[in-house]
Image: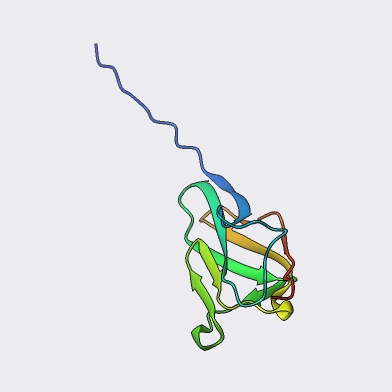
Length: 110
């Protein structure tokens, strides 16, 4: 008698959650400080691309302006009040693209 084993692979759209950096207090973000966001994902197949947004407009790397995009992390260096707004990220895998929850950034005067 021969037995065969089959494996069931489940493919799902990414599950995405956006968080402000763990050592930051959302009520105490001051001008001139650095802020970072973490785009947390769970996906099968794995996430292939993370895209960042502020107010639904894509955020691009601009190291000269202190905007650093590094995979699951977005860093804003020397933040100013103009950096305030709602941020989100999108994660894409072979199945779908999923948008995170928005996170509001409020920057107070130094």
